[in-house]
Image (tube, rainbow, N blue to C red; front, top):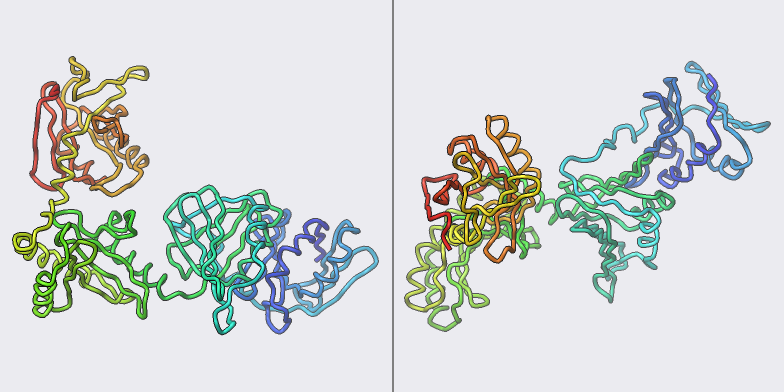
Length: 515
């Protein structure tokens, strides 16, 4: 069999060879090329990195492991030739590679190349950024030295994908943390992983000349970082980080036990574990081992005093696996759990312990020492609902207010209308456009009608896009609200606005045209 490979495709080896081991002792010192699915595919797998390139069209089915010295020999003259030919037979152990009057022959290294065992597909639920290849290279090859610790040992770097930014943080001896940030297109959750800088730069150099590079981080920090520009995919192994691994385990446990809303961190980086009654939060604590702290604010706006501290110490001497303390004008109750072994039962038990304890002692402490009585968070959100003004796009050129001071006098719908949204369920900030689309689809499937709308406060700030539905029943509308994790929906008719809870029997109403 003779395979002719154009010189420009062979020249792609400059993106492949940096990922090889400098040894011919095993297959990691070889480039693997194969014909499959109508194309040639080029693979390399070295220390902590791997790459796959899509080559030219090829209708055959064959594979070869090519030693790195062959590529290095051809790279010096490849621009001067039109093609490189590979000649081999399945039953023969020799391979001939040549161009014009020059040829090399070498023994075939049979065996399954380790790169073929890797998954080059984009990981599920990954955070993704897109960045210019040239900007990528300029930014991340600018570091003059690699970070080391006090013992001059090479240290990992941290790679962060967050809102509109790709960041790489390095810790240098005598300087501290230095972070390089590059603006980029972003979609997905904020994620953080660790890797070694020389491996990272090896991948950067692979994409120096590409117009755009897509970088994906898996929610599992132990999965590799994935780089892609369409024809080229590279994988970069991460460094095991006990804190990041424990954080991933905690997030998986929280979501399985409490739902997706509970892993939507607030502005303080805390997880809203319980959004009813006295709110319960969770936060990760870096240490040995990493801990997950479950806590609640018992009292707010309370000054420290010897008497208060004595009272808190008395409580601490009588409770197990929890503690109560004063910090920053607040009294907190908390439980510290080993993060890497957290399970759903332990999480629930700790939350219940904190909630029961906080609800029990909060009134007593407030009477004796003052401070602000905590409002049940659902009551606070419920009050905000009553200040909401609903608008509906009843036609492409006409938007009407359905309630409030500017409400339309004439009711525009042939019966009650239901206001449902996927935005910000239970006070958790969440963009809900996709959920709104699903709600609209479900309403139509149930035989109802929909128009677009929005809910906002009287000052018209913090508007939430919504679905205005009619032609369905209240129970159906509540079910759609529950699917969107909303604690309440609106039902509006010609005379009244009804606030209807999705998970309880709570309801309230007031005049639609109230000023």
